[in-house]
Length: 309
Image (cartoon, rainbow, N blue to C red; front, top):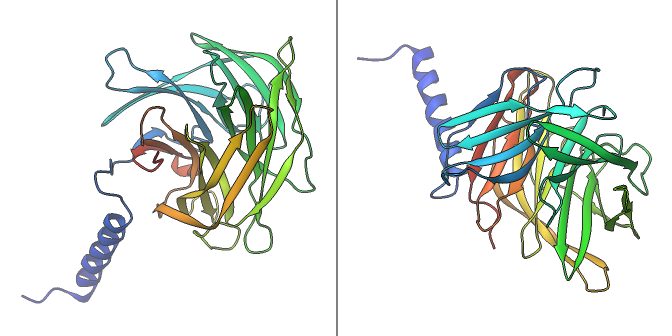
């Protein structure tokens, strides 16, 4: 029996979509996106590893939301397991940020984090139970004209600590600017940055107009820099994203930070219809936790083996 033309076209489109998804997912990947937010106020704008669950079957992560109005949720804890996620709001105690876009655990300091707002203010946080207390805050150094920040990562090597962050860029005319600097904290907790270096970065994918070349950054224990990039056509999409290996970072015993970007980023996976704004390499594993802020469509999480050694 011949199928009507519209039905045949629908089946062809579905088959093509399936092949695309299968073709961009590494072997052994967890291919299921799990919904963790239902609207534009509950998407994943950035995430940080907090620890494993007591039974070892799940992962606790902190997630920031890019809300701008007073009293709206800024931070949540998600317990992520394959097939099941639970979300718990955290109370924000202290100066209220506008448009949080990234969060990172401070290495070697349990319960301590740095969160970043899009206009370049970093907040040091102490998280105890269901409360995140602002210890102190300060502006990023060397903010460029028009910079819009969505990413922040920390790397501890050689006894020193360094920070990486980036202006996200916008399409062909504005590549991202990746910044790096040594980071210390004053006795009262204020973040203090050393000499800043800059590198221009263009994503290999996506390439749509207005592409955000860097929407988040994570660094492995060996110094591999893993970045996400994203395209956003509006609050209802369509969206598009990729995760790429971008280069390496090292910190010398004297505290000097060296960033070496690859001549061409290696695309590790592409993710049509999702806007990835959170990338976290999980310690002791090649697994990567990905989070999306799909605006009116909410937020999603999934785990994939993208970080490497």
